Image 1 (cartoon, rainbow, N blue to C red):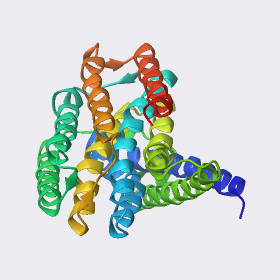
Image 2 (tube, helix red, strand yellow):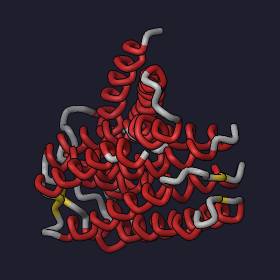
Image 3 (tube, rainbow, N blue to C red):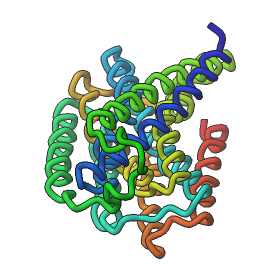
Length: 314
């Protein structure tokens, strides 16, 4: 099959999956009387992180730790710079107070942890187990502190559609949406990698850019659709939750199944870029509890400059 087919099929699956995922998850949150933010930080974030999990764990098992780590670091940078930037440009994103006071700072702290763990150019099984331990603590904390009422009641769901109130239907809709996102992301990544290899781009650069952006496409599609539909909690929760899942769960599992050894000289640069993006979210989010279009434009511009910088540092 041609590269064009992979790219077009991937884009279609991503769009349909994002629509189903946002509709199903937002209705599910209302039915269960929990916040959309909780759904975004857990169920949606986990589902949209599955492509990163597939690529990183497979690469680690194959002894290609460079691709595994590059995918996670690159995906987290893309989630903040590219995806949040685009979402804010579409429509200013309202930031929940809990994201500012808890989840965003934790995301930044977890990203910082990678620096001491990777000082020796290796992420071993002990570090992997530590990351998984932190993930377990974070999930327990999240589930214990996110049982607030949903900000939209059942009365606000689409009237005249009994299926919208059916929990089984909406769970199924969310699962189908996540499945389409994973399939679409896989198709798009395969097409993009084939195109990049034809252009002679190195594996490290491919992992940090093409594969990283490709595996972030489910987050992109879901958050963009959520931004259009004014489901800001799902949009921001998906990004912050995915970044936490990527570092703690996926990278932890990848290192646990096979220690990751990194020999790339640009690793320090990539980690610094990730730190800058992670820290930048905090003052941006606190400015009126809204991520404005100007701030979104700054994030997107910084991401473009980051991608362009590959031509300078390589």
